[in-house]
Image (cartoon, rainbow, N blue to C red; front, side, top):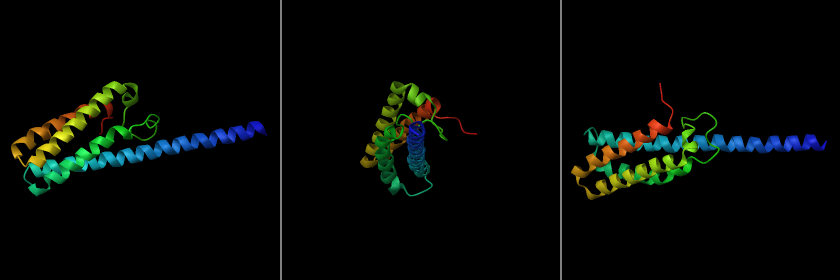
Length: 144
């Protein structure tokens, strides 16, 4: 009976870990979708398709999210249905460098947007896009 109880207890604990990992993945995907939404909105604004006066909102939004993004990749959240590659956890220093680059680029575009100087926003957006691309190339699975 003790072995059975231990087995059930272990099974329940492991289910909690898997549930937490699934929850982390879902949360991470939501955060990244919001970041992508801000990026797509900024691109549309800079291409002159929509309201230029919303540039500050989206730039601040992505800058705020950028500070959160490194935290949505905790250890143990790589198993399951996720686009995050194992390299996120296997190469933590490289991943941190990529996240720092993203955070800095996001803060830079927020500062450029706040200044109102459109000549600064374009280069800041390019740097932000490059930081996203660099991370996606090394740490995210390719999409079809």
